[in-house]
Length: 534
Image 1 (tube, rainbow, N blue to C red):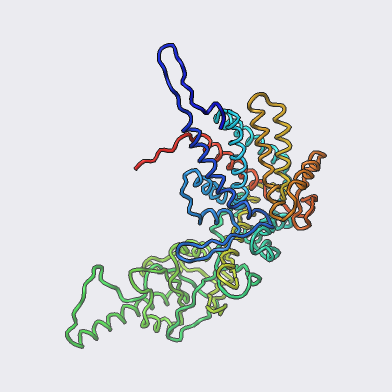
Image 2: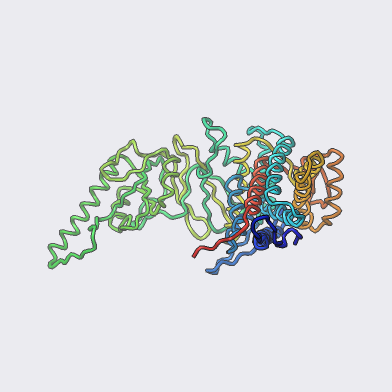
């Protein structure tokens, strides 16, 4: 604690005033320490040789993951400043999708340097302003290092996707998942809006059984459920005409809870007859349009189909898939290029979608329904992810999502940058040189922040079991000689030109990591008191 923090009575000509700075110092210190603890928790999972975390949730579920955002999301953080780091990794996940661990580690390192600067008696506002300048300068340096990439250059896209996958649990499958992610994203890019990709157009369906090797993209739709064919109905349909309906093919219920007392058999027969006629008239209307596949939206009010309606549907040779989730309806209608039908009265042929083949196939211990050869298919794609157990399956989905995000970054900002700690060391070197040009307190602050960025290569080396001191010093030396793409090759355990090793990442991942981390640190610095409101 610095001497300036010690409260001292100030004498003034008119009154004696007493200013107490001790509490503000304590609150700031507590905030910084709490946030650093969170950063240290995920630090070991950075990089391809990083460790995985096993998270045990309150209800007994176990998650094994390497993804910074997932780890922090599942952590129950109570301290308000530490919660800001959890939000930080979430915002990096939304902005870039990858680099969620990096951003938290950088924020932790910057906070560590802030503590040192505060103990030197520098005012938090000065530190905060210097940080802002550092982040602007850092983005310029990174942009200067980057190389442009074209979407037609598929190899570069695959390289950056596999770099993202290399640090995950499923890294041994990166040769399969990386091209799959690239093709999936490129297939949903709309030529009218070439730099926007909506990842909701890529549906990931998880199915237990097999290994990650069996993961595939499906040009069409996949449902993780079996067809409803209780009465020997069809399970395969060629030249399908598909209707997405939001009503039920079952007898209507009353709107309010009430019971009807039936006293004799004739009335009972009449009720059953009415039910039968009601269902038959519905099915006749459906059959009249030539529809032979129904996708029925899930309803909580009544059953989608009854045994009786299934029997008639089977007779009419109509295939049924029920319990389609409400949030999937938009994706399905976009893919099939059809309209959802909310009422039987609106059932018309122009609202149907067309596909060459719909079939039910066994997969693992369950069944799936595949719709392929869709006419005028919308710009969507489905990915069927397989895995030998639930933990691997979930992690494969998360890793695939990260890879998709990386390709999305490249579509929106078409620049690549080297990985392996190279950009951070280069930033550290250039900011250090820039600090010598600046004057006063700013120069002092920038120098310290430049040192903080070395935490990324340091941690990469540490997690790979190398000697971090030797590696980082050697790296600095190489960068001083002008080899800006030199980084740590974790596999060989030495320093090489990372660009030639195909370890590349989108520029957006690095720039957003720096800007978001500095923004978060500046916020934590500006807080000087915590007020609890009951």
